Length: 287
Ligand SMILES: C[C@](O)(CO)[C@H](O)COP(=O)(O)OP(=O)(O)OC[C@H]1O[C@@H](n2ccc(N)nc2=O)[C@H](O)[C@@H]1O
Ligand SMILES: Nc1ncnc2c1ncn2[C@@H]1O[C@H](COP(=O)(O)OP(=O)(O)OP(=O)(O)O)[C@@H](O)[C@H]1O
Image (tube, rainbow, N blue to C red; front, side):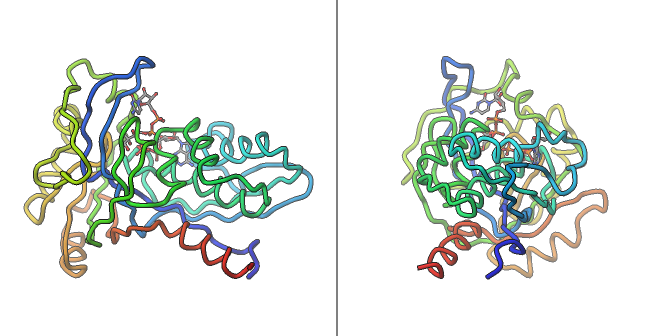
């Protein structure tokens, strides 16, 4: 297989629930969540070079290369491993940015996983997850690539396979900043912890949802519309909202009927991220 031409998936995640338990001394929030991996996302290509240069094939609209989590991830791995190799990275962006579906974090995780393989830097999964956490709280779950129950800031993960439902994800036309939402003075911050075995969609919630709805009517409206079809919730700190279906056709019909100003997609919930599946196949072939 020619790895220079290969397309590496960077899947989206949903937070099936998001509870805020408190605040840590560093200001970060102590959370519990269920990260659901999806079979839909961005795609990346990696063209390795021998001269150590790291760049994007094309800039990502609205994001300087220096700030792009993809470039930052590649530089971090290069520094850490002292690899003399470089890379030109191509990105097909499908995931709405600032949507609470982890697009940037997943791009960063796929970059770390792919380059660790292609540069042969030999870091373990634990080392990559630790490196990824310095880029963002959502990066480790994409390194581990399993639908999982999360504690801490989202980095303590216990795999918790879920039924493979279909999800309609709607993206209201607004950008909700994670830092802004966690800064709200009146966010609920004292939800009692639950054990993973107690997870149930109906008895959990997203603690950020009501505050985001109050400030962003577009998000509240998209949610209200979805709820007519199926059990629904906001993911992360928004702006995306999702609804859960057991049947793909019903999900497709709901998505097709959405108000025309709403973007989004239909995806299947998977227990293993497509990038982990791809890596396992590559490793098997190279044995
Ligand atoms: C809300 C979630 O999407 C749930 O999956 C994540 O916890 C957010 O993860 P993320 O986008 O990778 O967030 P980061 O880039 O690490 O943090 C953005 C900002 O959100 C705030 N933040 C983030 C995560 C967290 N557990 N507590 C926080 O208070 C911090 O002010 C931080 O500066
Ligand atoms: N490769 C990237 N893809 C998307 N956003 C990026 C990328 N690199 C940097 N960013 C910046 O990160 C911000 C948040 O983007 P992202 O798509 O990760 O948000 P999100 O879906 O809310 O993530 P999360 O669920 O992790 O909070 C963007 O507004 C953008 O400025």
